[in-house]
Image 1 (tube, rainbow, N blue to C red):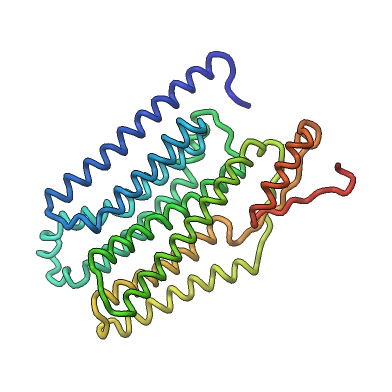
Image 2: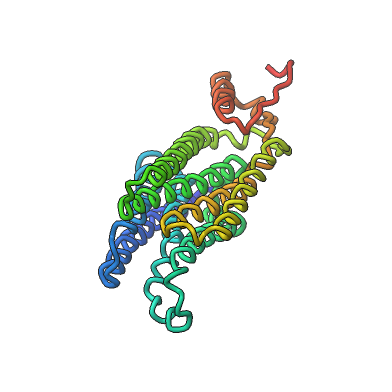
Length: 326
């Protein structure tokens, strides 16, 4: 049940403060990373993805969520993009800052630094996704008295994947520009990763756009999860492929160039992480959708048609209808 009377105005003022706070945090992120790059005399190109993801988060949360659609879910999606961009790179920047101290304890650290940075850059976002899904998002929606149904949960799940796709795409692009190699294998790997991340980002955002339209009807439908063993096997195949890639790197890494080893490590953790995170959100499940009593009695024919149309665009949803229902 939503807020009533003067409580609505109070919540709206809190949302306005949330918008202002988001702009402040995103601006501070821009400034903080700029100062960090200049102070540590770091090459700026590898850190450009941070600015790209922060800019994208502003476009989602403030421009789309606050200005164009006044959508609370879009606002929270922007926050997720922002924090995921920072979780990708903040640990790496901190390690760069304390490199001399670490090297004093472990003198071979420079040889392992790229691998450690890459591992941390992948592990931290995954931890963030888990904590956000289990703790942060439910409490935020409860605090602002906003409805959070299964459609909203699916939007957030797809947002996490889209964030990883965007971060991976920008990271590979920056890495390719900064460490540009002319050999055919490296160029093919760069192109392959860019196509994979870009294509996946497009598909995720397209699905999210559909789910955002469906979200306003989520109190009129019932969604039940069902196991999907075929897709589960695909997820396990991704995890197994990542582990095999890591074993190959571990066994034959000494024969590879540093850049080739980094790309193989990226492939290893990318495949494993994709399979693991993908399975956590929806790979192990499909969803059966039915209209509840409110949907059967309170929706017009045009609204029912729109729901059917939206659900037909989302592969993971299967609309079940009784023959005598309409």
